Image 1 (cartoon, chains in turn blue, cyan):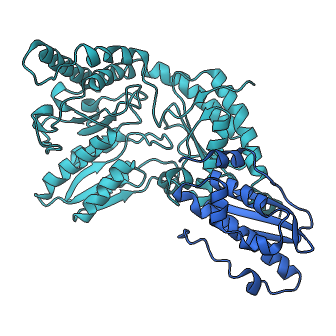
Image 2 (cartoon, one colour):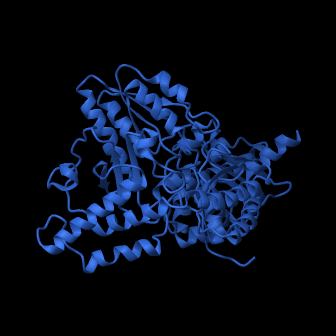
Length: 141
Length: 395
């Protein structure tokens, strides 16, 4: 398994690890059976993601994609965060081995899931804004 | 403690030892003859080849003519199984008995034969990772061609009752093959005394180089051709012999066959320290029988962490280990061995295999026992699964 230097850096020194107390939105995706769970916490101020933290159970790529995803949306507007694709996360990490691409999908879904929770808490139906958060397509369980 | 390099993955591969390398060296640049050539250089090569064969045979209690050199343990497994099955299929015997937790070299060969119309019985290995001889006995049928059960498991190190299984097979007139790649050097092997019909060996697990193995086939059991061509390996496996590797392998076998008990005693003590130390962590379990296991193999499941992360974190601390997690296999399912023990997927994902040998020092063990809890704590602190496990416990 060949990981890029950036993946290894984000794995060994993950950014934004932890929880946010009284988070405005919390999303959790993946499942233990597959070996990946990502939990994302967001704080939203005036439509801007002022803080984001994550906790991840998973492989090196899962930790690194979570870390990179939080970096890419921190300080950004919700609109921009929702536009973040798994591809952008992979590119920012200088690539991922093919078998690990599903980790980046999880990272994208974790953000969407946290923001969906934010909208739900605001009494707004998230589906028209966030869209459907699909199951991990790689997962056969 | 200062960071150090600790190689604890000897079940994956081993370092070529100095005595092995020393005996190999002349066969690269001086004694480089082809063992099939007629002149002195060639005859020297032939002599070295046959001496090596004799050494390998002697080490496992076989006759020289019963040893075939191959390129690896997987090749030996493939050859043994296919050889017997192809031949006996013509006599209407199209049933194979194996276990669910064999090495893939055996499992995938069996699966390939299933596609050719063979029927395969995969015996369970229960919670302790050991096949029951009684199950073998009950599974044998009129049309059983072969029983193939590994000597010791590569992931969890449990030792199988090969002698008892061999006896049952002998009684029922069924051939018995065992993959002894992990067992060699750690347990006493005597193929004739133990009634083993075929046995696979590999060089790189016992301090020889990668790319060399052997297959023992008891006299009287016909072997089909593996590679067609020249007359090497008694016409059964063509191709110029890899003499430096073969000579090195024989040396490694000679060393591996000596002082087994003494080495095992020291290593087992270190192994048990590792087990005891790591099991102090909450929500951990030893995989496989605590007693009937190889002296150097430890496999522990650590809940709430994922295996690949654990390995990467250990690597950052200089420790080489392995895991049965899905992520390390490149597939999405965790180790078939751990699932065979009845472990849940999420528990199997968090497994750690440490395989030590006689070069492992007590300081290495101290270091592993210092690093593992730290690394586990770090990963659990950031694990939502661990958080869930803790919450469930407090409820």
